[in-house]
Image (cartoon, rainbow, N blue to C red):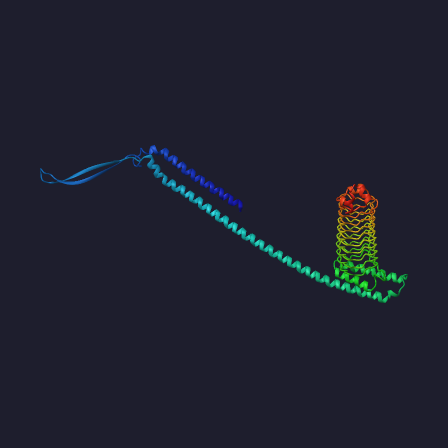
Length: 448
């Protein structure tokens, strides 16, 4: 269709060009023939004469008769000049030009009208297409929402059925085998616990992201004394998103378990085996990890403010960026732990083992590190302002660019002037008089 319109346009342009050429050629031919035309009288290019004959009656005085007299008058008109003929010729030429211009204007108007109509149609088509697309998208979203809601409803029903079936079977197992009365060395007891563990891990995988029902299972196990009294092994259990707020999981075996994003605020986990467990992003504020094994555990990004890690094993644990504000690590083992950028403000690390721990950029303002083992630890760019460090062991400790403003370093062990000189605000820290002299600080300033 586009090619045909282009051909028509080319044809019309050529037609206009041919008309213009024909008019121009006609004018030239006329001008060339004009001298010849002056030689032909009847054409009207030469001089024109008009002879008028009039009759008059008069009285012949001699005879007294009335005589009719014929009077002949000849009028010669000037021949047509070139300018006269050009003026006469200009009228049709002007009409041709005006006609051509009118035709061209009409054509442009027609083309503009066609273009405007085409644009209007295109806009209507586009608007209709967009409306249909929006309608289809809205319909698709509505269908997706319905499908999602239906899936959630179905999943909810199936999860509830799975939970009830699990509780029924576990109750039967507990009653039929009378597990509580069996001795710890009884093979039947061990076999029943293996069945219970397998069913528990299976239903936890089945519930997937249903944290509420996962929490119900753990609480059922707690109430049935499977976890504490029967010491059910839940190693590698998938408990992400589980709501265990305030749950008593003391001495439970959660080796390698996944607590990603779980709620364990105020939970009791004293003596629990949590080695290698994943607590990334979990809520653990006020949780009690007294004496728990958290070696190699992942606690990055966890909320641990006010948590109790008294005597806990956190060796090689990953606590980067964790919120440990006011947490209690008294006597805890944090050797080779990663505490970079962690918030340990007001934390109690007295007597803790931080040998070779990474505290790069950690915030330890007003923290207690009295008697802590800091040998080989990295405090680069950390904040130890107003921290209590008396009796702490600084053997090979890196405190480059560390803020020591107001830090108490009285009786710090194995601390050298070379180490202190690498820190920030070291002259505002508190030292023993003897060590102050090594740093060339005035006694009155030190005492203040």
